[in-house]
Image 1 (cartoon, rainbow, N blue to C red):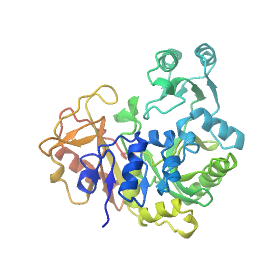
Image 2: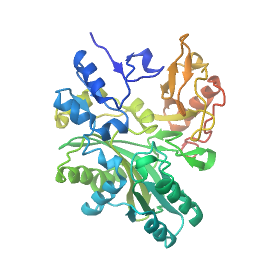
Image 3: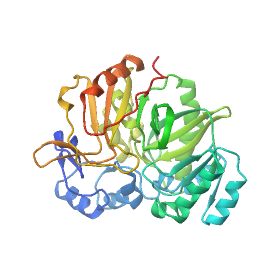
Length: 397
C-alpha cells in the first residue's frame, strides 16, 4: 500500500497524506517513525533540519533521503561560507565583507555607497536581508542583528555587500553529487506590499517561466554559476545532492549570485512544480540512488502564476487560529498550496502562520494564468487576509 506521511503537516497535506505531530527539528523522532513505517523516500523541505544534519542521520540509518547533507547545506545556512566559496572558485557575486564585531562592521558601513545590503549570516526565515537606503537604516540593521540579536545566533556574523541592479531570477538545478541537470526558472516578489514596498518577506508570490529567460541565458547561468558551484562543493569534500536554488541578479556585467538555498524555494516551488512534466518522485529517487544521469527532466509549455495570501500584520506580528472559508468554491484548475494552516477541533481549516496559502494557476501565457488567479482570490476569506495585487503584472505578456 502506498502511503504519504507529512511532519508536522497542515490542513492541505491532511487531504493527501497522514499528518504526524512531529516537529521538523526532532530528527530522532522522525527517524524512528521512518524506520517503523518502512519509508522508501524522505523529502526534507525546511532549511532548519537540513542545517541540523537530518540527511546525515537518515543516510546513516539507511533511509533514502532527498536533501543536502549538513556540510552541503552550509551554502544556505551560512552566508559567509557561501561568499567564501564563491570567492575561492570565481563564481560571480556581489562584492562583500563579513564581520563578527559590531564596531568594525559599523565603521565599514560608513564608507560604503548606498543603497547597501546587510545580511545576517545564518538562517532567518527569509527575513535576514536588509536593503538599507540610508546610513541610518544600515546602522539600525547592524544594531538589530548584532547587538539586539533579533535573529538570534544567525546574527553572530553579518555580511555587508554591494547593492546589485538588474532583473532578479531564481534558477534551479538537480544534482546527485556528480551529474547536474538544469531545471526551469522563476521570479518571485519579496516585498510585502504592491510596487515592491514594505519589508522583505519569505516571498509574496511568483511566476514561471520568466519571459526574458532564454535558452542562451539559461546556458550561461548553468555554465558560470550552477555547475561551478556544485563542482566546488565536491572539491570541498561536501558533495551536493538534492536541489540547488540560486537567487541571481542579471546585471550589466552578467548574472551574479545573491543567495543560495539548499532546497526548493518558497513560493517559487509552487509555480515550478505544476509545470513539471516528468515524475518528481522518480527524479528524487534518481538523486538519492546516484543515478541522475539516467533521467531526462521534461517541462510543460504552460506558464504558472502563484499569489500568497498572508495573515494581517505579516511579516510582523499576526494572529492565528482564524477560520478560512471559500476553498471549496474555487475553479477546478486552481491549485492551493497550504503553508500556515491547521485543522481545527471541528474539522475546519484555520490559519496557523504568516504566509497562509499560495494560490496558483497555469495557462497558455502568464497573463492567462494571472487572470485565473485574481478571479478566484476574492472567493477565499479569513480575517485581515492580505495579498499583493501586482504579482506577474509586468510579466503578463
